[in-house]
Length: 334
Image (cartoon, rainbow, N blue to C red; front, side, top):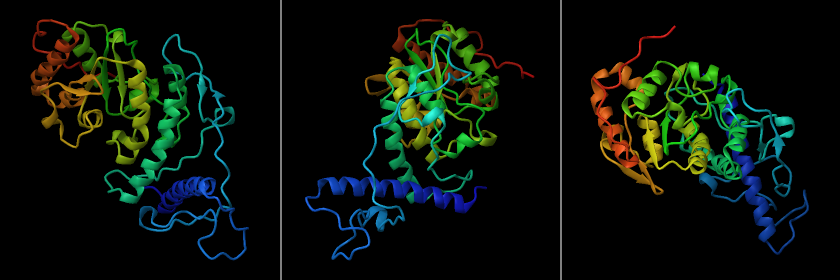
C-alpha cells in the first residue's frame, strides 16, 4: 500500500502548481503591482492562490511564481518497442537528456475509493498532459512523449510503455484496457493468450492481417498484478490515447471491455448496456465488444462477440462468413 505521506505530498505539489499558475495569471491581469514580499498588505498577499479553490484557500510555501516557460523539445532514444521504421522524436515539455519529470499524481491502492480532491487534482494535471499530447504532430513524437511520461505511479513499476501495434492500413482500431505482463516485457499490446485470441478474431473472423489494423490500450503502462486501471490513472493517461486516435484517424473503433468502452463513448453505462449496436464519437463509428481475456474465461460469449465484430465489419464494408465455431481459444502458452 502506498505511503500516505507520499500521497499527501504529491497532491500538495499538484495543488501548489495550480495555485502558482493561477497567481501568475492574476498578476498579469491586475493593473496594480504586487506588494513587496514581507510587507503588510490590506488584502490577500500578492500571488496568493484564490480562495475557494476546491472549497479552501490553497497554501504554498513557494515564493512568487515565475512566468511559464515554453517547453523545450528534447531528443529521446527510440523505445525498444518502437514500430518498425519509426525513429526517435522530439518530446514537447521533456526534461534535459530525456529524464522524466517528477510525478505529481497521488498513488492509489487497488480497490480504494479515491477522494474527489484527488480526482480534481488529476483533472488539473491532465490538462497539461493533453497540451503535451496535442503538441505532438506525428505518431513517432507521440510515442516518444509517452515513453517519457511520469504522470502517475505506474512509471515506477513498468518495464516500458506499450504504445501500439499495427500500421492502420485498414481503418479500424482495437482499444483494450491495459498492458499485461507479456506486453510490459515486449512493449507490444496483446501478445499473450488474450492477444492470440484477438489475432484469431482479426485474421480468422474478419479476414484481415493483424499488422494492417491498429491495436492499443487505454493505459500505456501495466498496472501491478494486472489489476484494473484506477480512475486517476485513466484520467492521466487517456489524453495520450485521444491524440493517438486523432493521428491514426480510424473509421471504426472497437473498444474491448468496459474500461475502453466507457472512455470512448464518454459513458458510465456498463458494457452490457453499450454493446450490440453501433455508436458514434467525433464522426467515428464505435462498436464495443468483450475483452478477449473475458472470452477466455467465458467462451460461451464468443457468439455474442462475433455479432459485434460483424457490426464493425459492416461499417468497414467487409462481408465474410462466420468462422466455424467462432474464433477459437488458443492453448495456454509457456
